[in-house]
Amino acid sequence: RILVVMIISPVCSDFSLDAAAKSIFGMYPEPRYLLEDKKAVPNLAAIIKTIFNQSKAQYIHGSTKALGKQWWINNGDGTRYTHAKLSRQDIVENDYEVMMKLPGVGPKVASMVLYVVFDEIHCVPVDRHVRRFMICFGFASSRVDPKNIGLMAEKWFDHSQWINLNYVSAGIAQTLALLKCPPELARFQKDLMSIANDYNFSEDMMNFIQMN
Image (tube, rainbow, N blue to C red; front, side, top):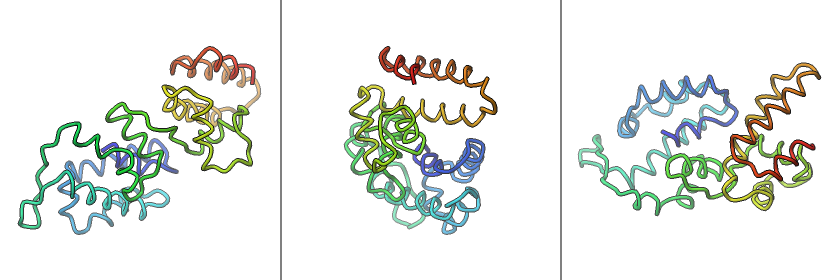
């Protein structure tokens, strides 16, 4: 379920994501139902609706099918699947590198899924919010190749804060979207420091943010 949500999430509002997820999991409460549905891709695309909905639908179906080869057992009649009994270690051994090979899964999706499900931190999950954060606060130049933003963030931030950086930068973006006049900048700074404090940013990092 976390993988499906993460595949849908790019360029998608929280409201649209929540609505799509509820509809998908209502129609397909278990992966086997999606695998058995010959019209799964068009059905998913119709539910997702947002930009790139066709691609996202194909990614969800492709990833489910790929994972099904490892974690689901075909009962032999071509239509029924049952869950393979795997331990946590069985799944963890097929973590980051394997997930990166799934359709529609890049570093951000793989790292976020593994963090939410297994509390494992593999890299900084970079998206447009993290990139803007890094540039805005002087951690990176606007000329830097986006592919290198994650590596630069990992040098600046402690390993324990890599996932928090994604949450904080998204929170900042949402706050900035609400700003309509200069007097609200003071409130923004207060909110920013609150976010940084909530996610246990170091004192030096909080001072740096406050100065900038």
